[in-house]
Image (cartoon, rainbow, N blue to C red):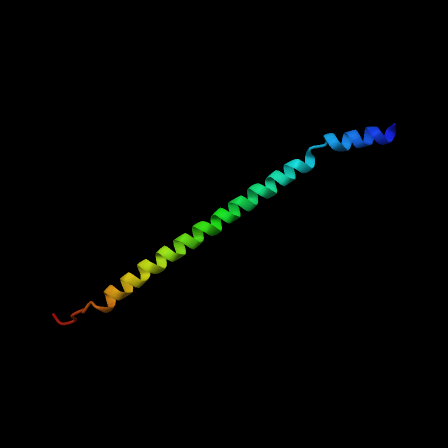
Length: 64
């Protein structure tokens, strides 16, 4: 009988379920962060190349 009570208590214990929820939530946040970082990196590279191209074609006069 004691074994059945122990098995029932183990089955009803939900402490581990909270840990699993936090692990899944943390993994989702990390994945979203990586996706945003990848998107922003590609966008900034494009803008940097455009600015560099524009600046290379600009002439600056230094005489007054």
